[in-house]
Image 1 (cartoon, helix red, strand yellow):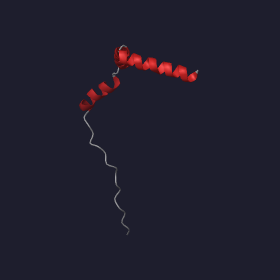
Image 2: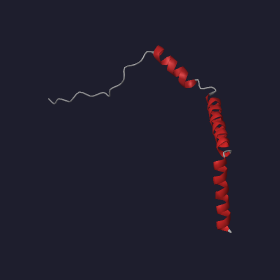
Image 3: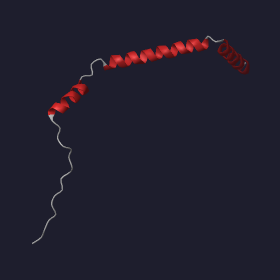
Image 4: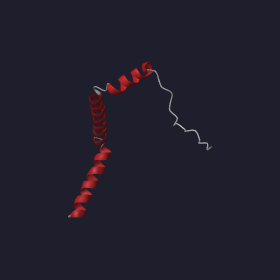
Length: 78
């Protein structure tokens, strides 16, 4: 008589009651307006970055640096 080892079954998580899964399922499938909100956030970030650049570009130091850079580029090339 030969003995065989008992079969091992893979471990499975305990089943969750359906009531616990309902809020998660509603959250996962109801994403209406998500793309619009992402576009709004990206647009606001771009506006903030653009306004920061405007403030920086209006300073006299930056204007001087950019003017010197352009003059140097034009004199080296020509």
